[in-house]
Image 1 (cartoon, rainbow, N blue to C red):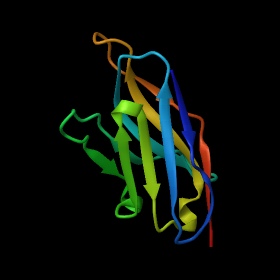
Image 2 (tube, rainbow, N blue to C red; image 1 turned 180 degrees about the vertical axis):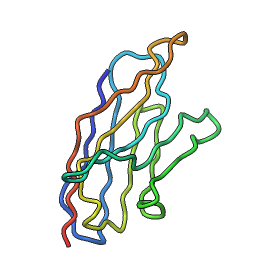
Image 3 (cartoon, rainbow, N blue to C red; image 1 turned 30 degrees about the vertical axis):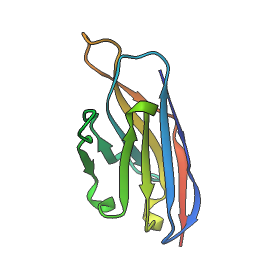
Image 4 (cartoon, helix red, strand yellow; image 1 turned 60 degrees about the horizontal axis):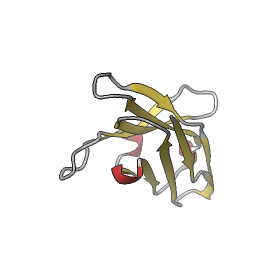
Length: 125
């Protein structure tokens, strides 16, 4: 199983960026998916996460206080993808952003945590 993230880059403060992450490989189910970030010299922290939901109900979401109202996480279960739309970016959002997913290999096993390679987001002032 691999998580491939894309969409990072350089943006001016106040701008927007979108991140995408696609899970590939063989697995039974994608459970919760999310985005974490690691600012320079700091520990990795949760940015946002989204549960799997159902065919009719979108998964519940959770956000770090620092990004509420600015970032939106979403997922497309048919594409095994999770997205992060980041608006009103500020220099303090500069970090390496990591995709994360809890993945079950069979209906009889608990999920295992997987990480994608990080993608750099740099916000200039």
